[in-house]
Length: 237
Image (cartoon, rainbow, N blue to C red; front, side, top):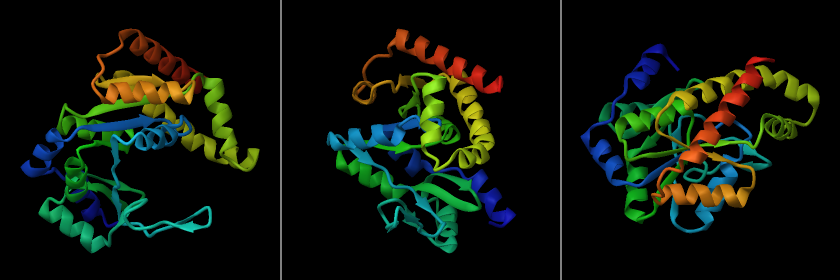
């Protein structure tokens, strides 16, 4: 991505139409470190029928995952760089970010589909994305998912790799990302914390939060304490 395009993406601000639509659409953002089970929770929530899984757009090419080619409109909406530029110029994004030299973002037309479905829009985002959405509308609900413990999270992470050598090679980058994500979550005032110690319980908790359950102060304090403990363990490595 050229630097001019990157700066255009970074500086992008949605127009009044996008902001109004976002405020009128129930949205839940699932945030958390790699390996905490966000995808599993989202899939279970979608199966319950009350959720619309948002499909974001990207300018990268489709990939083959587990022998299956990604499909347009399923994993992502695959746009050309020119289409992304057009959306930037015409205010076609709700939120957009540069990701590994590509342009990734949520198109207004996709948010409109979620709104028109009458369901709760749900998406998996990173902490920076969650911050952007919350700056646009305080009606957006953000849930930070945590593992039961540092030890269990490390076990889950290692299972994602074919060998110890692969894990060791990838770990420094994942460790840095996790520390950043935890630090942002601890200091952000808008997260609901959910500990994924048992999938059914975590899904039920996220479902209740999405439907407007009052903040569980005890769960919040437990979640923040766990986030701090995991962060401390990572910093001590």
